[in-house]
Length: 336
Image (tube, rainbow, N blue to C red; front, side, top):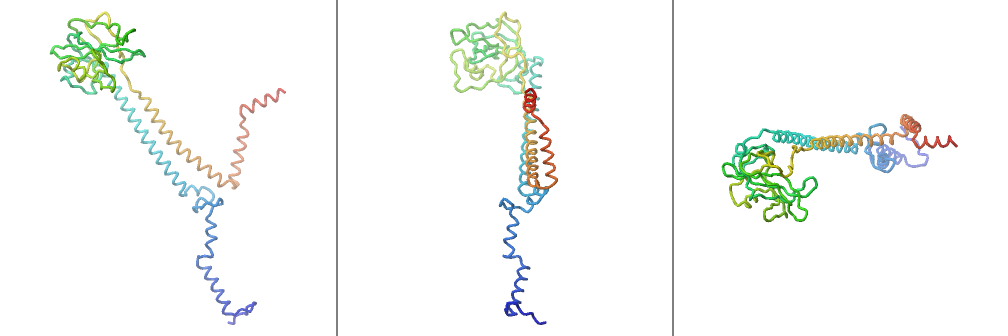
């Protein structure tokens, strides 16, 4: 077939080569199509689009950015769940401790030697257990424990050794006395009963030393029974626990003020409050994610008829909600 003449007078062979080059450039994606492709992948603001977020509807929610937000919200919720479970466990521990304290506090008194098998025996589970012991107070070896405030007033606790039938000394905290008016010591201390007495006391552990707190003479900084033992100058002293006086027979005419009359309790409700707070924090994280997702959806689809109708409806409802100041302004205008 004869080739038509080129209107511009170019050779027929050159025209054929030009046509073949054009067809080849259309078949192979290359330099000719690259600028257009890059331009199409850019968002209106000049930001690289991911191919999903640039489309309408909810497809943007499946972009890498929003999936990353979702992963962060899930991780945050898991962390909050772990902290909530930890607070629940703490609450159960507090409940168990309160039950043990209550049982021990109101327990039937048992002989001291049955509860404490040796001078240094003691278990934390024995705290507040009521024990009964018979002996004589060693008034000359009585000690005062410094810096023991009670109901907001400074004072001392009176620590008197009770010699038991087997010759050991069991320290009895007989109660609290106020600091004197003129000296750093009590004005007076009610005397312990003379002769043989039967004492009911609640077990308390030996206290640790407090750095910087010292005492001289017949005073001690804390009820650290190893220090009390040194003060008394004998090895026959119970060093595992001492007794907080509950009752004694015969009962003297006057006694130091009791420091504990009701069982102490740990606050279970505080742990429940923290547990609920962590759950709320996890829900807030998902709520914030959902709100941000909805906000971006509205912004991306603000030109669609459906979203424009919803926006108009929201605007109409906002206009119907009058504030107190609007009502006051109307009343003022009506009275003019």
